[in-house]
Length: 318
Ligand code: SF4
Image (tube, rainbow, N blue to C red; front, side, top):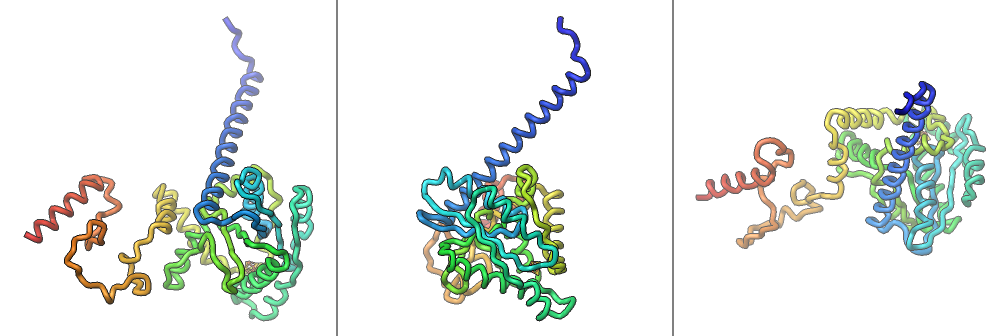
C-alpha cells in the first residue's frame, strides 16, 4: 500500500495540475483567436498575395494582439504578404516613446514611428471641456492614409474587435439615428486605401486575456485626458450587463450584423417599397407579414410556432 502523500507533495501536485490546466486554457484561447482572425480574413478577402499590410499600433492590448496573431498566421498563410507596424506618436504628455520601438525591434518586425504633434493642434483648436476626439481622429486618419502611401502599404489594418463593432452600432442608433457599425473591410473616403479589421470576430475579453498571457507592454490609453469615451463606456457597461444576465445575447446581436433583411427594415433606399405591387404569384421564399417569433424558446418550438402561424393564416383566409 502506498504511503499517503506528504503535504508538500500534495501542494506540488496541485500546483502542477493548475499549471497544466492554465496551459490547456491558454492554448485553447490561442487556437480560437487564430481561427477567428483567419476566418474573418477569408470571409472578407482581407489580405491577398503580395499585400503589404500596415498594422496600426496604438500600444493598446488590441493592436498588440492583432500584430501578434497576424505574424503567426502569416507563417501558415497560403499567400505571402508583408507586415509593417506603424505607430503614430501624437506627442501626448508622458507618452512613453521608447516602449513600442523596443518591443518591435526585439520582435524583428519592420516598423515606422511617425511623430506628429496632433495633441497641441487639438488643444489649440478645441475649447477646454469640449470633446477633442473627432478632430483628433480626423487628423490621425489623414496621417495614416499619407503614411500608407509613403510606405507602399496596400492594406491598413486596424485593431477594432467584435465589441467595438457592436458598441458602434448602438452608439449610432442611440445618438445618430442611423443603423451603422464598423465594417471589417472598407475603402477609405479618399478612395485610395483598403482598411481592414482582422479582429472583427474576436471578443474583447479574449484579447484582454491574450494580452495578459503574452505580457504585452501596454501603453495607457488615457494620456490625452479626453472625456470623450463616456458614451462608449456607457454602452460598454450596458453590453456587459446584458452578457451577464442573458448569456449568448452579444453573440446573437453580432450574428445579426451579417444577416440583414432590408425588406423588413424601413430604408426605401435599400428596398423598393414604393414600387411594390402584388404579382399574384406565390413565392415560397417571399416575405411574410408576421414573422415567427425568434425568441420562442418555450412552448411550441420554432417549427411549432410556424405551424400555428400557418393555421391562423389559413383560418383567416377561409
Ligand atoms: S481619446 Fe484622445 S487620443 Fe483618442 S481620439 Fe480622443 S482625443 Fe484622440
